[in-house]
Length: 166
Image (cartoon, rainbow, N blue to C red; front, side, top):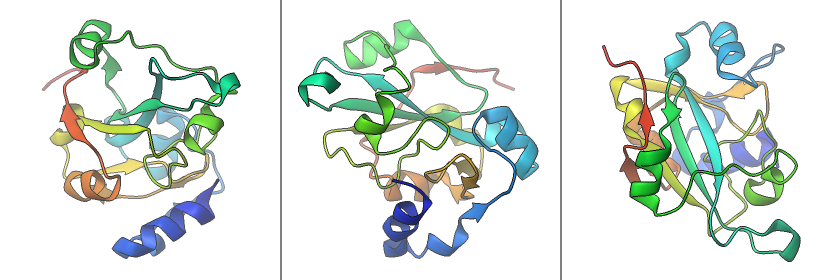
């Protein structure tokens, strides 16, 4: 998948034309912040985690996607308390099979895995708008946290990260 599939997905909410594509890379929080011209914390990174059902080789494709602020880090203890599993990320080679998106463009939109659980971390709530990736390493969308929750079809807000609270 890529930007075209994400644009098609976002049409339902009238957000397909809001995607900004850049010549420069947005593949990491730091690169995206520099390219977009915002503080790194406002980049909404989507992190993929294995679940007990994850077994790419056997065709079982469950995972968790956590969308968090760019300055947030997964807290292993909080993650395990909330989800009941350790926070293990799949290999970069397995991420496209789990999400439909390659590393650098993973986003909570047009995820090809109906069993993927999408959650938003409360670290995002500090901002009126955030910038998630949109299916490629050079495309982002400015969106409110409320719209992000609805459009991503998130299951819940979670508190599984640590970040510098001001």
